[in-house]
Image (cartoon, rainbow, N blue to C red; front, side):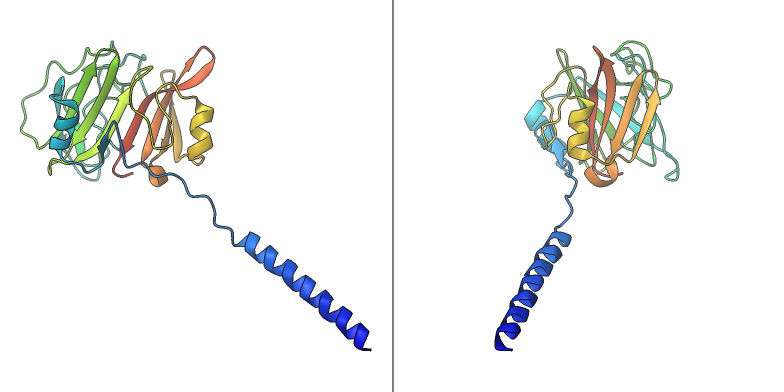
Length: 234
């Protein structure tokens, strides 16, 4: 009887140990999506003076004006990639993404994949800017073949950072850069908010969880990043 009791006790302990391992596996935390907080050596919510210290005077400053906060506006401007999809929630006047909720861009921006109404060659838009008074501006930088921009709000804080082209210095915290493939992006961000297709450009948003969005074009048979946006909010 004593031997049988010992066997039963060992069996129960073994099942208990297996149960503990199973519980530990069940409780393993799910992998969290990366959250982007900046790009190009500038953090979101940095001051405009931080941008000046890092990059100097912008090539162009494009105004962004306020509209009905219930609307999501879209700008229109130059596009070296033959037009682009509308609808990224954060952006400025025609640089390739729609303005933040409550804003509408004034004039086109050079070089970025455009939104609805965009088109023409990169750099063609933006020279003619309507008269206005505004506290919101988009600072655009052209450094040879490298193009990037910072959206500055009415508190002189950076609320969006864009970089666009086939190559450039900007990269996300996970190492995604201009020229990265669609597979590269999906491996690290995984769960897009939505896809938008327009004029041969595919836009993929990860704004809800990761504060980042990308535009892709097919280059030599591979979908590659041609536009990256890191934004303060969805």
